[in-house]
Length: 210
Image (cartoon, rainbow, N blue to C red):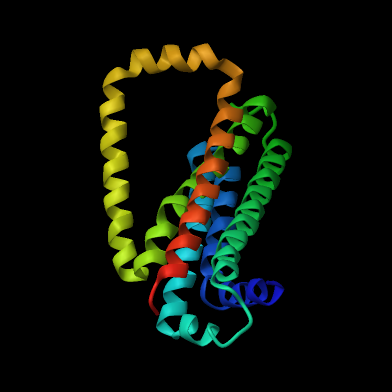
């Protein structure tokens, strides 16, 4: 397993270095502009990294080659999920550091420490959501076909959000009812979704013909 994670790190260093540069750039833009929306771009980019890795793996026939190694397909899938969590955590740390730098350079900003911590705690949800819905179809059908399913999923989710937007008053009352429990519930729900996604990916990939 350690070897698989090392292989993923080497690939990120070679092929996805620009993603990491962009994370730092968006962090710097957040410090300068104070635009909280800039905090979501780095975690979204981090969530896309495993898709890029899988595309490179398929292009190089890595999955066929990996059958000769003493790794199970479950371990190969798990490596993608673990590396996603690791780099998502790294992105959150960078954003937290950017927030500290911003508070030092520009004290008395629009956001209080409490509000900033709330944003930082919710930002990783976007980074977990993307690979959670993206990886199962990719492991089932491959990068190209899986990407099409991913776009269909995104369209369906956008449609659902559009429907829910018609009931803003009811949603506001529901959110007010749960109050401070919203963030813990959202984090727990997203971690559950990530775990279910991992189990589906393992199941799909173990049955897939290479």
